[in-house]
Length: 102
Image (cartoon, rainbow, N blue to C red):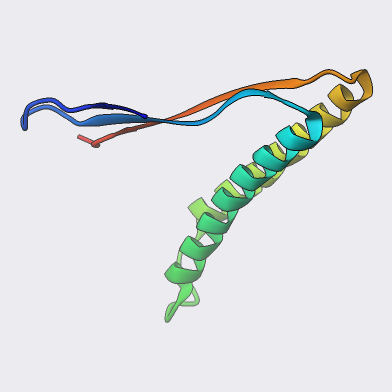
């Protein structure tokens, strides 16, 4: 994990290496599904929180993100199914970049 700390007037940035390496198709599918499912669950909880006490809450954003993530999961599954036929391995690299919003 790489952390860069600057003076108080500047932003603080951090990078988190979530995944880096070669994987079998099954391993890659597990990692990809876990990451996407976790993000879907985050948005579902966000939507539930918005609706508590207000059934007419505007849940357009979390609803849209859930649909987008479900679609991305299908695309990834189709890609992995094609790779599985070849017997190749999957190389993945994923870094989460975090900074203070200005």
